[in-house]
Length: 198
Image 1 (cartoon, rainbow, N blue to C red):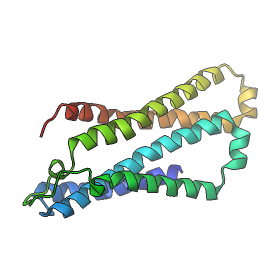
Image 2 (tube, helix red, strand yellow):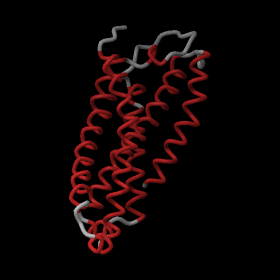
Image 3 (tube, rainbow, N blue to C red):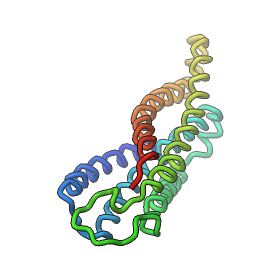
């Protein structure tokens, strides 16, 4: 599952940079082409955020019930979870194409805000996906940090006996640092967009 998030981030980097250059030049110059490119960016963003949430929940269950986790979590289930993440990301990213976008008009220059409504970005993307995911991740990683604090009092023999548990705790602590920095950037952006008027 961690490999999937790496591929998603790589895909975002490879796609977002050329898309930003295309946007800067104003291409594609028609409404539906611009809307489609904008939705692709939303899909990749949503898949990335949902993946971070699923990884946090994965770490939670790995620490909460390590024996059950090892028994239940198979590669087939990991593939099914990844497919579910992509389906959810695609469906939420395509909502502007389903109708929650600005009405059709002739465009000569493609800009994100000309096709995607700010209400969609703030209420669905920010409050519905980003903020909700961050609150859940904060709760999960707070629990994991409490486990880390408690495990700091264990003796060396106890940690050796539970080495896999200790590895899960360390990995979760690193993931906390990985998720908080990029996701915190969305707060300022969407709070400023909340007050924007067309």
